[in-house]
Length: 434
Image (cartoon, rainbow, N blue to C red; front, side):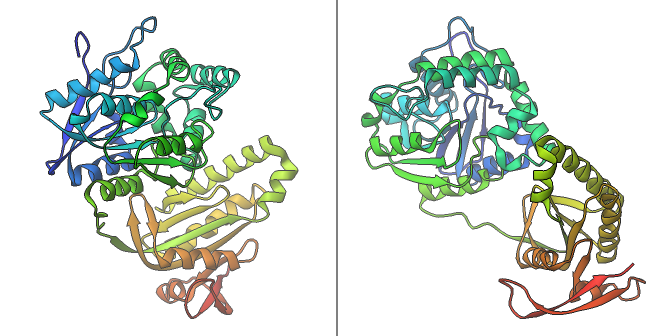
């Protein structure tokens, strides 16, 4: 674009041209390194010719002079230039965060180039005004800009922006790394200061004539949901869809968003082929975690919880278990062998016991659905229900697990038949002895 280079990629060969850009903190190279964002992009490309780019000032595109940032209208030239060089005469646009206002202006200024518009977690204005009371006050903007200048690219900010992955340390480190690759803290603070104070594209909303979908998470403190509702109310015929949680950045929720976009643009929700594996699922849970946290205080509890997490992960490594997810004060893990899962649970109980922590643990073996890095299906629910019935310090298993480890030398005590909430039938449960 003029004297600047704008980085873009084209993926897929579907009948629909679809332009996607993320805004500040985006990076078209590193987004492919995170399974959830890679799956999001691949799903978009499965029904379209996906054109994916970084606007000037972020990611792989040229930087900007902080003393002369572009106007919002000038930023729309990035959209036009990318569509031109990609050979797209008309495209649907998906835009999030500060990319949203750029897409709004482009759709209003060049309606012949836009077939549909999807706006994700964005706004027409961010600062408060007499006729825009939902905006942020000047002191709130000052605080946010200060936070970005001090915390950009670190793990704490990544947890705030994508709270659903806050307990996954590797995920958090990856998100923080993408932020550092996209721009420096000084650049992030300067751009957001400009964005928050100068943004106002409300006059363009009545000019949008293409089908529009507004998606917005309900719990984000950075871009409250009222901004999304305002967009939907002021764009003729726009549809508003409220999303769960508070994730603004890369997170597991992106996959579901891709399906919503596909249904909106094509009229059909993609059919996802479900992969299934036979695996042994382990659930762990700290006994009395709420009372313990209240006794220790935030810092003491965080320190103890970190020690617990390190101890559990070390035993999973030793017994070749795979950490699937964390629940704040517990783990969901999977194993390719039930005997090894039982022995791992016993070892976890021993090492956490030395920390003064008691766990409840439950095991079940069955078929699970693979959902990216996560597991789902009835077998997971059964393991969770079994774990909830364990007494403090106990490893409780289903009859399926007991039958599979016959001859292993592992001893069990019969705990009788139980009804598991939401699971049909009566289930025989056994406690691991020794």
